[in-house]
Image 1 (spheres, rainbow, N blue to C red):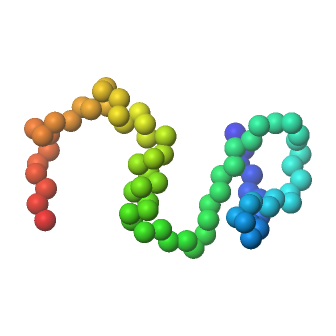
Image 2: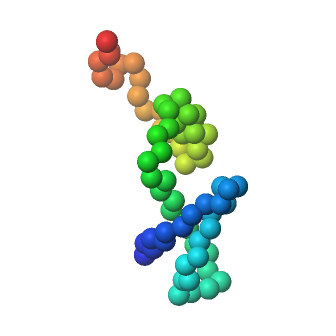
Length: 76
């Protein structure tokens, strides 16, 4: 798998504008977008993570491997 970095901008509606010619056509692609210098508050971050389908597997019974007998209690 190759990584391609493309500089792009967004318009006033938040649409991504890419004006880069790629050396292939009619292919499915995955886009990795990293937004620079944008802080997100913890509440928004946790909300986004809780709705991310990438973590759905954590709700499966076979992932529930720990009990209160594991580890030590945490105290502030």
